[in-house]
Amino acid sequence: MVQPIHGISNLIVQNQPLASPRYQIGQLDFLSTSDNLDTLKKVALSRPWVGIKVTQDQKMCFELPPEQDLENRVRDLGLFDKSANFLNFKEERDGIGVECLVVAPPLHFGNGQKLYLFVNRRPIKDKALIQAMVRAFSSYIPERRFPGGVVFIDMDPEEVDVNSHPTKGEVRFRKSEKVFRTIYGAVKNQLINSA
Image 1 (spheres, rainbow, N blue to C red):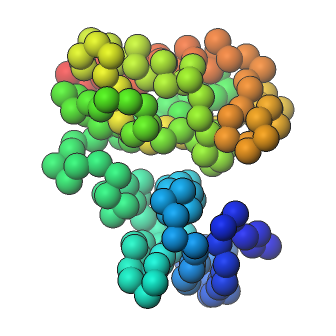
Image 2 (image 1 turned 60 degrees about the vertical axis):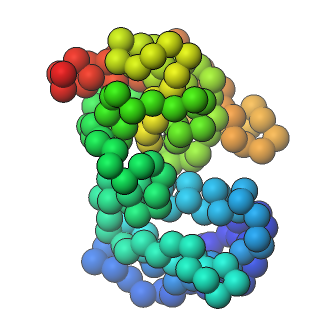
């Protein structure tokens, strides 16, 4: 079942199975706001196996093929400078899966807007997780600067409350310190190993 995303009209889904039992989104026509485009980019990021084509006023915003790897999806969406190098890794610690595609140092940003965080494929905002990333990068980027990247956290849905905020954009972890340590440790180890 496809549910419309806020502010999107005329959602057309082509029920054409790909190599696996997934579906390809043919075209999304949406109201002209940057928030809607940002939402669509997050949907595209969270599901790189889905092909998606987004147009605005019959002009192409982006078109993404199905079955993309995360780095190509990020590059095709133009989230970071084309010359950016990435560290791509997956790790599991204490029942928490972490998949990261982070911008390699020395590239850094003025705020946390270039950190795309997802819990169980749901886009979220979480100041503590941003701080975990900032601390992990603290030896590699200047003070009061932020890393960039995409972070997927996969964990038991019972361990995260998605109803703690009206927009469902913020979550509350039952064991927030454990999640913080997991993200910090996974990213810090990857940075040390790649140096």
